[in-house]
Amino acid sequence: MNFVAPTSFPDTLGPSALKGVKVLLINMPIREQARPNNPPVGPALLAGRLREYGAEPNIVDLNIYRIQDEEAARRGLEFGRSLTFAEARALLARTLDKIGPQHVIGLSGLITTLTWQTEVAKIIRDLDPDAMLVSGGGLATQFRTTLLDWIPELDAVSHSEGDDVILKMALDAKTIRDLGFDRANKSGRLAPYFHDTRNGRPRFFYQGYRTADLDVLPWPAYDLLKEDVDGFPVLETYLNTPVWGGSAKNSSATSFDMPRSISTISSRGCPFACKFCFRGGQGERNYGVRSAQNIADEFLHYRDCYGVEFIALLDDNFMVSPKRITELADILEPYARDGKLQWGTHGRLDEAADLRPDRNGGYKKADVRRVDEMARAGCVYIGFGAESASARTLDAMGKGGFMLSNGITKINGYEFPLTMVEGIRNTYASGIHGNCTWIMGYPGETLPDLQTSVAFIRWQEEEISKGLTPGSDEHKRALASINKALFTATAYPGTEMFQAPKVMASLEQVFGLTFDAKTKQPLPDENYRKYVLELNDASKMIANSDGRPLNYSDMPDDQFVEVRSMLDAGKLDEVLSL
Ligand code: SF4
Image 1 (tube, protein in one colour):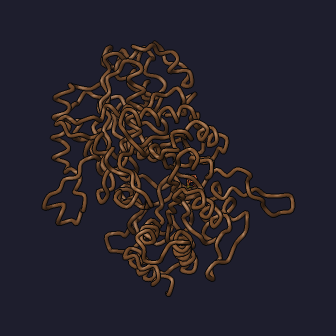
Image 2 (cartoon, helix red, strand yellow):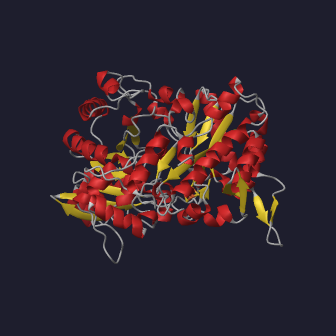
Image 3 (tube, helix red, strand yellow):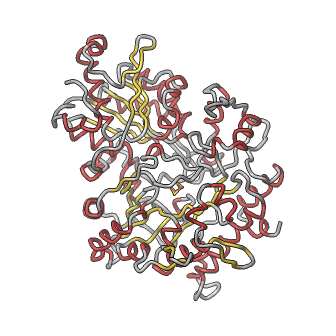
């Protein structure tokens, strides 16, 4: 069969077009200091898609393992350490022994997984030399064909959303296996993604795109995670790990427990354009949603099938459409009433504030607020990327328009955007726990800017404590539910922030990157690769081998380092008194 236009591609495939095609998807480890809390939803979605056409997918989730041993204790890793490369190799070897050689082996992970993908690619090339080895997801979307040079074992890179292009990948691998590369290539069936050949191996550059209708996609094939090759209960471990909250050890504090939870996605992309945010793997600015009915059906399926009481929607921005929220509330309200089916997601504080501009240049409150409708649907948690409470910094981040349009209000001597204050008040009033995450050290940020964010955190504590007896358990729990951790501004390639003059200058000085004057893109040299290897989830400050920090703010380096260590120690009041 010849390849046709991408948007109609899956329609031309019969249900057994990929019969007998074996695909192994490998999820990379991340955030060793935290318990693994989210099953690999991307690989599980792709596996579900492959099964629709007769393929045989499997998933190895290298992120689920946390080993408690002397090494973990030595490194102070409360939940245990990730596998070593040797342990990962042994696990992959046992898995491949069981499932046999594969047509396609896919590596997936965020930009922070370059080290792991580099090592696993070598392992796979050795264990299953004939498999088409592909990198997809966040790292691949950010670096595209550069990754073919940085990880020479790769046969293919696939960027953006893979729901449809994974099928073409499996088909290409099958065609090559059936015909041999030369005949397959001459037949034209490897078009349009065949890139070149290197060392006798064909290389491909797959360009993902948004599938026509998100509602027709199968739900994540979580059943494939039931247990690993050794019988380790992968899925059950996730179900018993809270997605958010104190025991998840991430920046997402909650005021409630979630005994059994699971994650999924209800929308792709985000229509906004904050300068630090990279959304490449999840739809970029192309916002698309699943219907309320489709989401509700999935929720009920998880409740019935896995006994979960909490579902996390990992959307970048769930709250864009008030209409969809009301539709969801109309369906889920009866189930939400008994408190046995709760959920949480991410949104923006201006969506929670729901203030509408009026004709006199002021604003009026929405008749029906999104947060109230979400509470009616059983939502108990919203993660807000507040990032900063300083008007100047919000403007610099590209968040000023929607966060500052209703003006400023003065509280405790600090000037806060009214939208942020209203967003928090509405959320608390609805009964939903609103968790803000923050960034310190954004380009141009001064100490007073940062202090405004810290003062907002303190104000949130006051606000959530209203009516509670000081010192009571309830009061202590409320205070503990306010997130007090701040991320360090991190320049991820592909973001607008990465091309800010201050950022480019710091990356040149501290890490020796070289930017092309015209394109403002860094040369893909060893210095750039080393910088990417240093990237983490923004929970830590990045410094070069001489200890010089990457500081994009307007604070001098010594003050930046001092403030960072105060924040790491939870000494917020010391930051306020500087
Ligand atoms: S930070 Fe949030 S609102 Fe801004 S672009 Fe990213 S996902 Fe959208």
